[in-house]
Image (cartoon, rainbow, N blue to C red; front, top):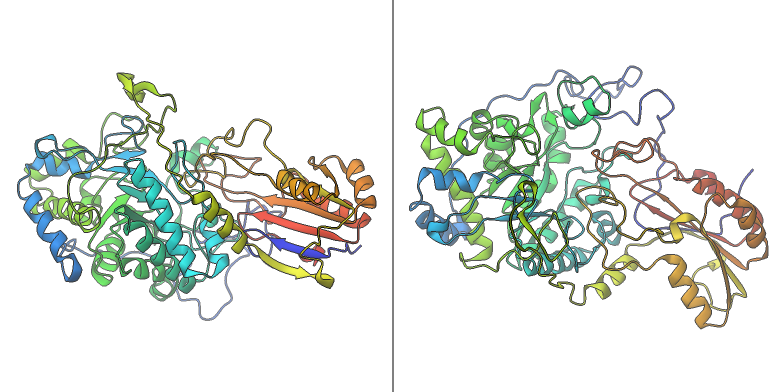
Amino acid sequence: MRYSIATALLACAGSSAAQDFSNDGNYGAPFPDTVYPGFESNNPVVKEGAQSNQTSPPKYPSPWVEGLGDWAEAYGKAKAFVSQLTLEEKVNLTTGTGWQLDSCVGQTGSIPRMAFRALCFQDAPTGIRFTDYNSVFPGGINVAATWDRGIAYQRGVAMAEEFKGKGIDVALGPVAGPLGRTPEGGRNWEGFSPDPVLTGYLFADTIEGIQSQGVMASAKHFIGYEQEHFRQTAEFQNYGFNITEPNSANIDDETMHELYLWPFADGVRAGAASISVVCSYNQVNNSQVCQNSYLQNHLLKGELGFQGHVVSDWLGTHSGVASVLAGLDVTMPGDSTAYHSDGSFYGANLTIAVLNGTVPAWRVDDMAMRIMAGYYYVEGNTTRDEINFNSWNYDTYGYKHSYVGDDFGQINQHVDVRGDHGRLIREWGARSTVLLKNVANTLPLTGKEKLTAVFGDDAGPNIDGPNSCSDHGWGSGTANYPYLVTPDFAIQSEVLSKGGAYQAVLNNGALDSARSIARAANVSMVFANADSGETYIEVDGNLGDRNNLTFWKGAGDMVETVASECNNTILVVHSTGPVLLEKWA
């Protein structure tokens, strides 16, 4: 049976003709880390070794930051600062203080003798994570849907204004990895587009916007991070998988340069070159990214001439000496193999490694120089506003060092940093909506429809509150909503203001009610979604990556029910990535 959909809208992703492998015992689509039986490529241009048994050649030493071009002034200031530091103080700059032990998701040690407070790293792709009175900005996928470089820059500016207002030094974004190789990829929505050229432009413009406001951008995730499945060993062992190493994205040199490295090249060479790069959880060519000398020393710092620092994704550091020599400058959050672990791969161990000659002293100098040169390049001087929030407790008063319950006092000042960003967010969201189909000029609606009906869970609120789900969205790319206007509320308000009648069915299981109302409606709007996120949260059996490309929570049944009763049905897709729409095309 064919269902009549008069109009299809897409809020934040494109339709896809991608094949759905979820029923083939593959637990998702074929990911780049492994060649699944039956999925071997027959493409003659696929290079030998691109699918399996790749290796990364060693590239040493790690290049010294040079301070060329417009980095000269910042380099001079950094040299003057770092030359006054002891070994322990330099190491302090490179080592996170530990998960839930300070205000931010990541903080370096401070240098009290130099009146230099800790650097605050905070998540970031859609707004400030773990705080209040902040905005939630459209995702990177929305920005790409606008094809507007101006919006990318303006969004970067607005986000940085909020980060600056909370005392944050480093915004952990924007995202060019994942690029979007896999349609089901859990974090594709944080990035922009599978097209490396489009992503490169928007990535660079966002970086320039962020850093124009005196906040360092930390471009991520470098590199080949195209799936959530098997990104970290412990996570998936906890899910019952028998793995001993993270997945490996096996990528030949041509593909690396033409696809995955391309946006980072644009970001590093942006008008205000990215100060920081986050190395990713996965392996590339069977070598852990954060200790892969070919990727960090050769490609990033060598070929691209990257002058800033490389920081590990959280718990992405797998060694001390090997990571330092391979180009990793900062380890976050500082813990070693697990959150709240006793030791660090850096910290005291890095100091010992220098003293016993395992790590050359100049390498630690370079690490500190890269951190401080980037700091001076963007922020200019060592005088900064204090961090005025706490990521682990939204109360006004509490323990400043949350995990150990130490130093009770005021931890949140509840600074409202939103400005007029709500207006901009509304405008950018509208600009990112893509009209896929419009039969007989169904849209725009006239406002004179006698009965307007809205259907679907996705049109309504979460009855427990918009922020009731842990890291909704889901994962570290999310932020807390200061308010959330639902489609049901907005459309009802508009219809009633014009004297029309309005009804809504906000339960995808209430098909009998939907059938009755759709039969009487002059126009029916069905809201359907598909979600994805980061793998540390499992949602309905989806471990970050989606298991398929279909609608969630029975939305497909709702679409079929309404469309079979109303020949003026509008489908609104709200998704983190591509969904299969051929059935209703």
